[in-house]
Length: 257
Image (cartoon, rainbow, N blue to C red; front, side, top):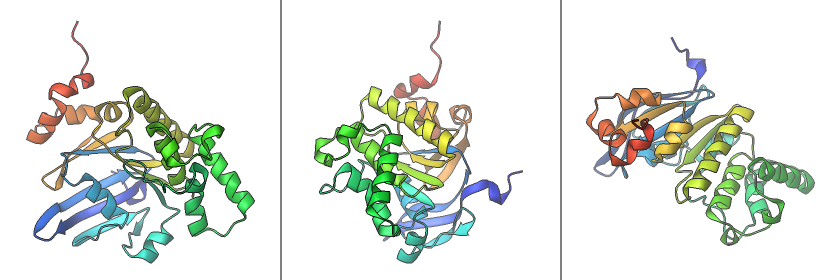
């Protein structure tokens, strides 16, 4: 039986809503330390809301959230104290357009640490090298970067403070299949090298199949199925069956001879 210390994230009976609409309805979820967990769900079904609630950007109505054994604090002070606990790659990268790639990676360092410019440059350089961005691109502005480069800079920024958990919101969205595949490999490599816990919101079936240790399906405001991909493929839940056995899910099943 799994013990609490084995979990990086624990969510219990979580309720989140906006006005009269309940988006997350008494949801419970455990994310194990050191795993890559993929979260899937219908568009507008609450995937990003769940992620943003866990990191404190959206207030909860009720329920409990623990991150690395500590109750998550939704206040600004709590988020700042948790800056080194997790890193976040938002959808489309969310880089600061007026800052270069290097300066974007330095931003969380400036906000949370008191270190010299030399050390800040060394850390930013190390993170950009870690995600495979070429030196010629380090001082480019976001508008000068390709979609794949933008994602890599955003990932380097998420890793700037050496977090134990990385949240990825649709990390391969907008990338061509080759770039998406390369990014999947990068995530796997970094997760193993840095011993990260990765919470990945995605609708990319290839990523779910090749990268994730487990997949959680969100429907009707709850986690309706969770486990390795094989478990999701045999789930009887109507939405899960429709998602994983539709026309675009053939890549998940071996071709017939």
